[in-house]
Image (cartoon, rainbow, N blue to C red):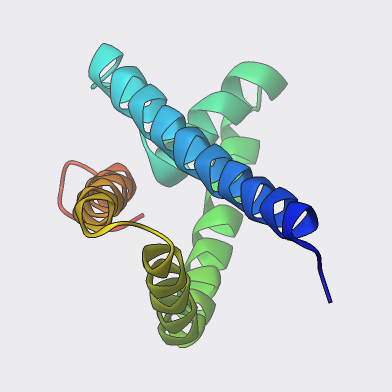
Length: 135
């Protein structure tokens, strides 16, 4: 059986861990928002990857065409895999949110839900290119 000071230490450690996750996620969301606002013309998804590869590797036109075709083929396959895994991931994420919420006050729960909603909405926007297609 844990004594009182050990219990408090475990609770504080867990709270610190949860706070770190929240601060990290919030900080990353702010950084992504700032980066996207600073360079709205910057490509996303495969176009961004190809621009980076072309700049770094100096691909020939033939290499560029071939690499783009390979990336598109695999991107499509990875998207299909994600669609089969996503329902389980969403369930796990909902369980995580519920568990975190159980450790918060009602006021904190509302703020947590708002934070998570904003973060996930931003992530969805980041994954959607200007034409409305998901990357």
